[in-house]
Amino acid sequence: MSQRKQTLGEFIIENQASFKYTSGELSRLINSIRLAAKVVNHEVNKAGLVDILGAAGDTNVQGEDQQKLDVYANTKFIQTMTKRNIVCGIASEEEDDFITINSQDENHQNKYVVLIDPLDGSSNIDVNVSVGTIFSIYRRVTPVGTPVTIEDFLQKGNHQVAAGYIIYGTSTMLVYTTGHGVNGFTLNPAIGSFYLSHPDMKFPEDGRIYSVNEGNYIHFPKGIKDYIKYCQMEEGDRPYTSRYIGSLVSDFHRNMIKGGIYMYPKSSKASNGKLRLLYECNPMAFLAEQANGKASDGFNRILDIQPTELHQRVPFICGSKNMVEKAEEFMRAAE
Ligand code: AHM
Ligand code: MG
Image (cartoon, rainbow, N blue to C red; front, side, top):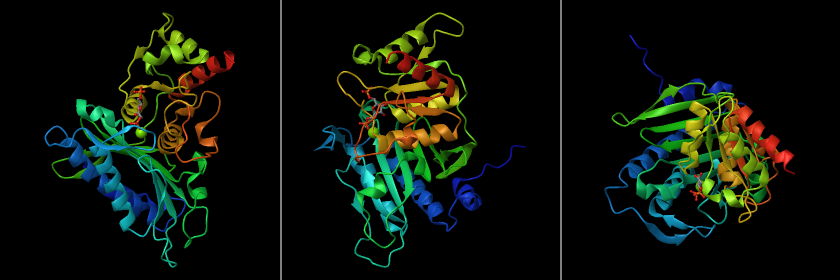
């Protein structure tokens, strides 16, 4: 008889002791993300049914059209995390500036800052393709009880205490790490609970999938062009398979399960690529490393980059260790 699967709630409680700081606050914070995820999931699932598609009329800080669901997800995650006395500041890909929580209350003890991309890949919503939420959690560096400052948000990725994503796919999953490996939980929509379905997720060391927007090939640096040609060459286990959903969370998730590499390099049109260091690359890099994978900007470890601004972009290469190392080799050779 199959054993009953552990729920995310049970898992969080059971693993609380393994957190570096065991006050239970981080557990409560992950719990609040779990709750918001369920609400957002419900809304994302209705996307084709109700008049919720299309741009909300606003443009975000990067000058892109905001979809209605982006706005909804942004509000829900911020509201849910703000209600509890855990978080002192939130930065979101959809907000120009960071949000200070409880700055008026001199007695507050909130220690954590959260950086979030509430609905990544949202241009995929109106064609019914998977999207995701990405989150990244740090302990503040400024004194507890004072308002947060930009310093609390501009921390290197290697200071993250937790990170994860929710994938709104054929099934909805929450995948996260607190620095002790990566675990994936699948939502049973009938019951409304996440169950541990993918314990201790690991990237295969080698893979056969490469994910990149090849439409931009002409604008890529030589190292990336050479690596793409290497992937397509007939030799050994190559040519590799090309798979690109255009939704980071989905491409990452598939590559982690099957083995592969995701690339959003710089180009002659965008000198730092497209993806944001704080909301997208750092959390995915933390997950990748915790799952035996690797994440690089082509030359340096993503988690070692010192951020200089909230909405900073960075070239991103991430996935199975040997594949990322091979891509780096081509980058160095083309220097
Ligand atoms: P977004 O934050 O505006 O949704 O952009 C991020 C997304 C990633 O999920 C995806 O991998 C990438 O943009 C796709 O970009 P492109 O269409 O340029 O290939
Ligand atoms: Mg995004």
